[in-house]
Length: 173
Image 1 (cartoon, helix red, strand yellow):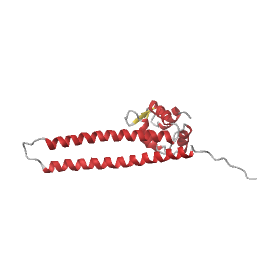
Image 2 (spheres, rainbow, N blue to C red):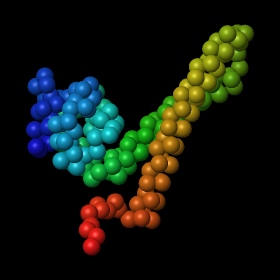
Image 3 (cartoon, helix red, strand yellow):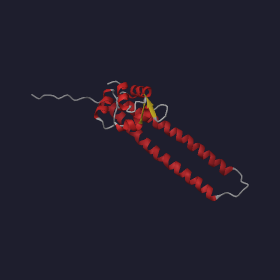
């Protein structure tokens, strides 16, 4: 089965694109999982795989994106884990930039002299919103830290022990 044939299997509507729901819907289909495995793709994280394949962030994956993703993510868990890590880092950078903008706005508000009395209620709402955003970012960072630590441990294990070796049955005499 080629990547193109697998894409056509996943594209039930035959509109030339698949959604995350299309991919996840087939996650438990043994034939689809086998096709992904024959292509050298890890089938443990279909949702993350879709996000990594959807390079234009349109919410759908075209055949070209799908095929390029299959080539890029091929190579077992190691390649997809690194791509997931890269995606997570981009997510954090984007959100840190957003938080930096929010903090700059709040700082400017606090430094600007006021002609009118300061609305305690408005400031309170802004601080609650900022606190909520910081809490969400903290949760994401904790999740990413966990993924990074697991990747490091796996890499160290493979470096120490070498790549996984298939054990062949032996006969005793």
